[in-house]
Image (tube, rainbow, N blue to C red; front, side, top):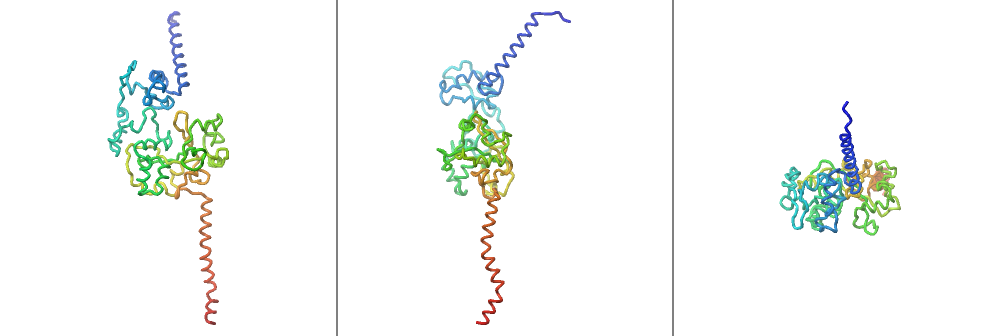
Length: 364
């Protein structure tokens, strides 16, 4: 056995103390700022101490800590893209990484698109708020496009061949039709009109407003009444019937699972059956998309068939040809039968009474 060495023992204690302090410090920073990327949070803080404060920097240099904190760019750290610039003296801009250094495959795909040469990555994406199509609403996706493509102009352009083009553009993210994807799903957002109106333009309800409605509970509890993180058809119907929030609606948007950067005009999207086929699988896969405090959305699975339950499931997403409802089927059958009764009944009566009519004709 080695002899006791008080100096060695002291060094071990100091090492353990430092490790414990580092862990507690990282945990404290994560809890305070919402970051989840460990030691990198402290390194980013050197930049965010100024750039995370709107009173210290100009608008274009301000970074929303909450929205930046969950991104991959936050996890790799500010210096990965901007280098190390101690002191950051006024008048000297930090270097900016070329997106191709990490996203070469996306750049090659984008270079072959109709947008190539018209704008660079930052023309559509805020590098401090990078999110996937699953994390943001369809309305936010379309705002990226509207920076160059004026809404009224696009409605008129699509109206040359697309019926109700204003409705389609409002209810579909642009990437649904202008990028290729094999799989689609329906994202349902909680929306409301101005001044609580159920009519007119509907906007996605934000996190803080929904949090107030939930009275401190989880926002999902507004719909998921039993708290199992799964939304049933019954829960959807109850949400839509609840008079306490009658000004709220569920609005569905068909969204691709993956979006390419090869923005293009796809001929098959001009075929109505791409969306309006009878009961395709995509139409039965749906999620409730709920806003998070960091500006993203989380998806909660909904029982299959929600989109097809047009009257109570998603009243703002009724798609002729793909939406089926038993009640409407019975009503339609009754209308058809009612329309057939008169001609069929009249024809049958004339056939059965043909001999009597012939006899009367001979007598006369």
